[in-house]
Amino acid sequence: MLENLNELVRANVQETVVNNAAVPNEQNEAVIQAASGSIFDTLKDQLSSGNVGGLAEIFNTGNTEGSAVTAQAAGNFTDKLAGLGINAETAKGLAASIIPVILGKLTQKTADPNDSSFNIQDVLGKLAGGSDGKFDVSDVIGMFNGGGQAKAGETAESGGIMDKLKGLFN
Image 1 (cartoon, rainbow, N blue to C red):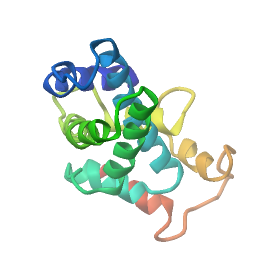
Image 2 (cartoon, rainbow, N blue to C red; image 1 turned 30 degrees about the horizontal axis):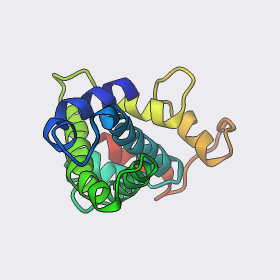
Image 3 (cartoon, one colour; image 1 turned 45 degrees about the horizontal axis):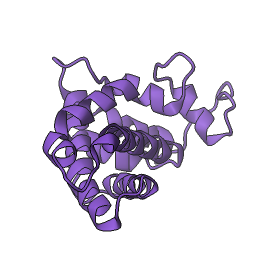
Image 4 (tube, helix red, strand yellow; image 1 turned 30 degrees about the vertical axis):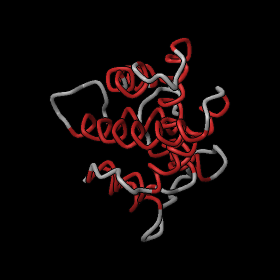
């Protein structure tokens, strides 16, 4: 997934990064890696912290503008750019122009049945850290109980994580 995310970023940042005088050419690839890594890390963090509703919102509506997920990814990206020595104003500008676009394209691709580059179940499997890379509810439950497997007969409370997860597949 991360390789596909890198390619998605690379395909959409030519003007913003490569042709940007404020980003040294030797750092173009590091900026692309920082953008895709920030998005991946944020999605993983959102899932592991239980903000499945926020993920469902962006993946179901495709609306990434102003979402908490977008804000967190932009903040992570800005921090990574600062670590590369890119000044704060440039970093904020890059984050504002890259992160919402890439998240929007990612959500479009997961919703498109004719595009196999990103499948929502595979994305969730990678984010949940399943050893097989496939989405399994026990992977997600494990995220909430310290990595243990769900016990036989365990069910989610109404309004709990299972109800939130259902929102991702509507």
